[in-house]
Amino acid sequence: MKTSFLYSIVIGFFSLSIMSSCGRSASTPIVNPPGVETSLASTALALAKQTEAANPITATPSPTATQTPTPTPKLSVNGTILVMNEDGSALFTDYKAGIQLVIPAGWLPLRVNEEEYYQAFTSDIATSNPAVNQRLTQIQDADLDNFRLDAIDIRDEHTVSGILTDINVNFYPGDTRSLEQLAEAEGKKKSAFRNYLFLNRGYPKTADGTRTLVIDRTWSQDQTKKIFQRSVFFSRPTGVLVLNLYSNKDFKDTVLPDFEQVINSVAPISP
Image (cartoon, rainbow, N blue to C red; front, side):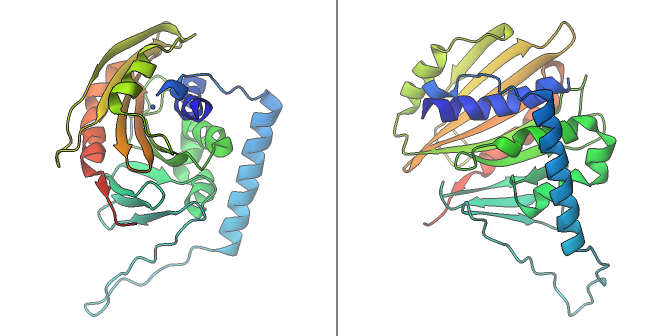
């Protein structure tokens, strides 16, 4: 269980540092040799092209007064559904975690190895921003039992000094530790990151009164690239839910309102 937590935090950090939570969530970078990274990118790109060829995008007539677009959500093999809304936001439902949440407009939400993931590789967003392509490649190896959703901020100028702004959603089934126990474990973590700082922790409540654990950290990739991470822990009946935000440290105040919106949208669903 400790290794799974480490893995999710590292996925977020490592990919951000290329361009540029709980005792098992310590950050240990996942380093793939250059040849493996190239292979992963090539494989994903090939799958993207196959998906695009098998499912060509055709023009859709504008809805008439008698037509109402109806989303056709598809349940993934990992028990999730992602529905894109007309206003650009997305509704994510995770039946294993027993929650749903909303990703606001301006973000690219995707589940690894699902259709939207492969299509992202050939999108204008990925081809125009190398950092996005690097992110997509890096998360291909994620443990999908824990790594449930990734959301990349795709707005202009929101990749700062090569550091993507990113939100990921993780779930760790079977972890019954309290928020206090998780906080204690997080506080004991050691890190090899340069200028790593455990800034603070607290137990704020969401808009619906759900108590959470919030931990902020920062570290440096180099003298000009400083990364900020905020992790929010939810103690669920079936396990621990963790949402992480990563951004350039000097840019965090711009994107924290979006992250708070996501946190406050988390709601339980019936099994």
